[in-house]
Length: 85
Image 1 (cartoon, rainbow, N blue to C red):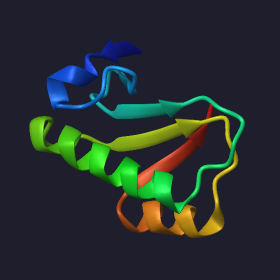
Image 2: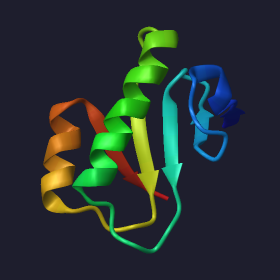
Image 3: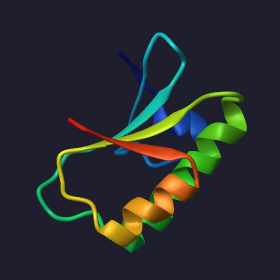
Image 4: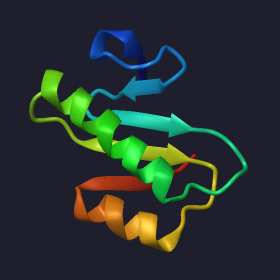
């Protein structure tokens, strides 16, 4: 997996973005606290910015944190898949 420069997409430099050989983009959130709806809204914003520059790519969330059930449903409805680290 190749690390992407998040500044290229107009995002904060602390956001960790990676891309695999299939051109799928992964947002990595490595923390212990739960991913809640406020985070979900931010993730959607990040995904839209990345998809505006990278057409026809899949967007995934890779996290070690538990994800709230409402947030999981919200992200799945917007075609953002969640994978464990």
